[in-house]
Image (cartoon, rainbow, N blue to C red; front, side, top):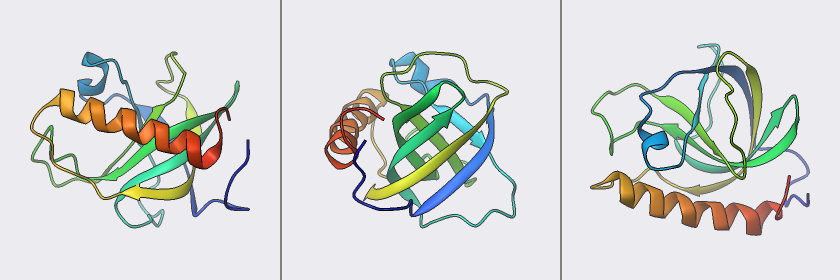
Length: 133
């Protein structure tokens, strides 16, 4: 995979935990990352990422921040949609390298709008980081 950056803007490591399952209902499940609370985070928003799993590396779209489209909680979450990947990661520790800031978090009126935007984000990730991890 060709990366525009020699090293990631930020690397996060944590345990994949259960979220609310909203993404799964529209065909875009996310890995919800629980990290050490003392870990410094980059600015909130959506990033092009590479997810390192025991089976190899995969491209991802990672949101760091609030989830205004699905809940009113003011708790920062870290969620990654992993491109071309469909397996259960609950309970596993994964590493997520953030390479490019794509956009700020946006409040959408429906999960279908979120799905359309994430599809556009996936296209942008492939352009920025290459077709395959």
